[in-house]
Image (cartoon, protein in one colour):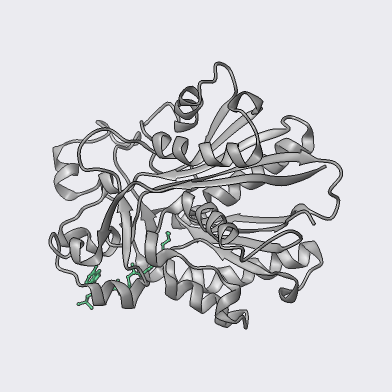
Length: 335
Ligand code: UT7
């Protein structure tokens, strides 16, 4: 039994913010952001009203289901990857399930940040191979913008993140021996949890959040950017080789590398370390910023739309982020 992609979809909210827009709130510049990250613009939800990750996830799920030719009722499971759930609990997967008009379809959330799509794909693959589910909707969605410190204090993090969502429909197929999810390598190093985190509200604090914590900005993301950057540059080529070894394939067999979009310079360093020409590594961070759990499926959906990959193509999804977590998944499209 192989896990194959039957449809993909993406959605970003219409409010576009350029680097110049951010420079109105904090001491930064278009030049700094472009040079250090590659980002030119990102999309954030409207400043007014209530839009959660499940709402963005719903908008991304619709085209994915349509391309798969499925109705929501066909789903056996929803897997929702996010670091910015609508509520502290319950998970956004449950909210999405209701928004899709479903009554009892199971739904689970994955809190694996930048590698949420990778962990989600591996989980979906395990459900499908074990026979627990046949049709799964995997969603990565984030609303970062409501949780960023847009003053100069938070500029290193705030300029990076964008809101957005993407979804894939996954199905068990027993006729596609040479296609589907081919190999998975996942890792975590919890000793680095505090290198990239949002601490509060925190169940280990009593109360979970108070005015002093708010004053200190402990409800905003903290990132040791330099350290995370170094880890990514070291571990991404390592995990890419590991997953290739598992599948018995070489770098040459991969048509397109689809990395998490955290920083254009990280992906350029990855290409250099792997001796890859720029056109074999997909990047769209310039237009979306870092959409965390949504970034890999969002990139996949665009790569398919632009016909950069087609039937029979082999792709590698890979990423590193908060946790610390990192990993790679090799996938081959049906011929
Ligand atoms: O997706 C999750 C995983 N996350 C990542 O993979 C992120 C990895 N890290 C990065 O992408 C980079 O570390 C950043 C883009 C976050 C920062 O770039 P950097 O080249 O590592 O800059 P830095 O943190 O070393 O800061 C350099 C300077 C500092 O000023 P001083 O101390 O040299 O005077 C910062 O205060 O740049 C300053 N700075 C800024 N200046 C203008 C930091 N943020 C900004 C900003 N605008 N937005």
